Amino acid sequence: MTILLLSAAVPHATTDLARHRAVHGALPAIGRRDADALIAAVDAAGLRGRGGAGFPTARKLAAVAGARKPVVVVNGTEGEPASSKDRLLLGRQPHLVLDGAVTAARAVGAAEIVLVAPAVTHAALARAVDDRTARDEPDVRLVAAAEGYVAGEETAVLAHVEGRPAVPRLAPPRPAERGLFGRPTLVQNVETLAHLGLIARYGPEWFRGAGTPERPGTTLVSVSGAVARRGVHEVPVGLPVDEVLRLAGGPSEPTRALLVGGYFGAWVDGAARPALTDRDLRPHGASVGAGVVIALGATACPVRTVARLASWMSGQSAGQCGSCVNGLAAIAGVLVRLADGDGTPDDLGLLTRWIAMVDSRGACAHPTGTVRMIASAAALFADELEDHAHHGRCATCAAAPIDARERVAA
Ligand SMILES: Cc1cc2nc3c(=O)[nH]c(=O)nc-3n(C[C@H](O)[C@H](O)[C@H](O)COP(=O)(O)O)c2cc1C
Ligand code: SF4
Image 1 (cartoon, protein in one colour):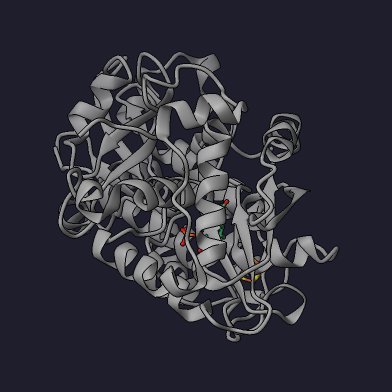
Image 2 (cartoon, helix red, strand yellow):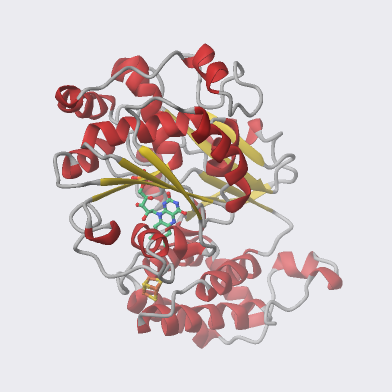
């Protein structure tokens, strides 16, 4: 199967519709009566969302299809700092994303699309939208995405489009029932929609030509950390992680660990060689998520790294739920103390207890996702944490030059 999201046939950004169609062909017409068949095709393709949770797209389409005055929202917020795939896709393949959004709108019977994307992408997107003059296409409205990790959560996106602060609200009701201005709303990630734009053309069997039965297709992976070249790559789901690192020019130093799935993901031992698929990653507590792989080099102290991530994530709390605001701050505080050599062995017990107390709390997945990442670090870096708790530093810190060991605490 030729890989087509970032196809070599489209080497540069193409906001030009004619050029886009020369590569991909026209988007097949989908009438009201074809909508069920289209949703069945998406179901047969096994497309799962690429925004993080991996929810089956056909089920989301079916939940909104036929509802009164539905609307489609394209989520291009990309609040995950280690991810840049959605921005890349919006810049390089805006028409493919729009094809997917139009396809989704036709499947659910929506006459309106709201495209939420970073302001820097708007000039190119506006040109692409202007280029599409087909009278039967839904209207597309561009909205500049809000900043921050939780701003990409779907109910936060909807609040932002409505002109309110971009913070999550307690669900249910889910957006499919009561979304944008109370209307049934389909929220899909940018990459999910780009895949949909291709499935509408080439069908489910083509899509299943790559990936695994559980998670078919290709996926965009943002690779960063201790690699030769950070960047975004399109890979078939199930590619061994080693191969993913090779695409990034290989590790720049021995790999101590990999954070797979982003800041909501899990730490995987650098010696493990899982394939990038949920089945292989599950035993490590990880999932493909939004396709993020961060390599931690052997010269970086894992305790300091996790303390920095935890502090940042704690600062991203939307400040609405006690367990999130206070729990994440307390956990980050313990990690920073340990990282800076100010901790005690009692801190290890506090860390375990507080992780359990915060897990599954809060109105959105922010605290749960964050403590899942921290719990995986606590398990994988148990020796380093013990060393920090008992001796104020680990072997990696001892080997690092003094000026590379600035305190984590501000
Ligand atoms: C804290 C938090 C942040 C999120 N950030 C994003 C984001 O930046 N982009 C995104 O597409 N989905 C994000 N999501 C997931 C969305 O809520 C939603 O599930 C997704 O946009 C649906 O698209 P999909 O089914 O195509 O993946 C986030 C979820 C949570 C809990
Ligand atoms: S859990 Fe945290 S991020 Fe989510 S809504 Fe509550 S305070 Fe905001």
